[in-house]
Image (cartoon, rainbow, N blue to C red; front, top):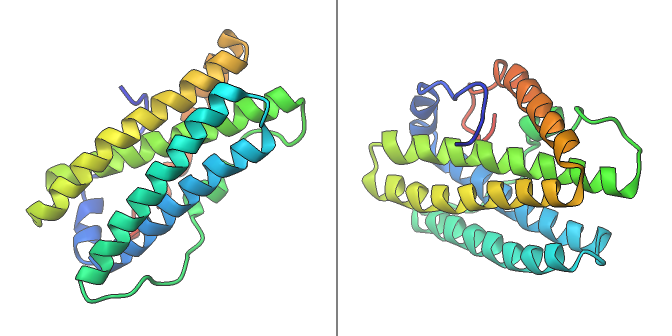
Amino acid sequence: MLGLKLPTDPRWVNIVEKNIDEILTDHAYCEQKAASTAISLIISFPDYTELVDEMIALSREEMGHFKMVHDRIIARGQTLGRERKDEYVVKLMKFFPKGGSRNTHLTHRLLYAALIEARSCERFRLLSEELEDKELAEFYHKLMVSEANHYTMFLKFARQYGNREEVDQKWNDLLEYEASIMKELGKKETIHG
């Protein structure tokens, strides 16, 4: 369903289980960045009314997820750690060339967002199925469902605002590129890395 070309190595969950506090902090910042992306799309493309409406709802939902993760951190007797650079996103954002029309820029941003959500969904599925902590596994199952909806929403908008054939080709090319960078990642207690 997600179209990812390279699945996460299941051994990644072993790394996560040894570093739950680290993954929760990384996850909290991922949710915060997702809310920020939604707000940024509103600011950059205010004339796309349907997109703005969806991004308003998404920013609220992502901040709700941030709070849920933050609450788990607090319940574990920890505090939110400092933000880390997301290697995955930094590498991913190098794929599309800079410049181009406003509409091309929007399409690229939507495709990046769709792929980040798809990878998050895939990682959350793995956590929901493999974590020994059943309460945390259930938490990730609920988030997995939400992330799948986000991925499809961003892809739908990219296809709506761009040329469908071009968008589908760019999506496939981006998926291939993402698979190549994922070969280097999956060895850290981060959601994407």
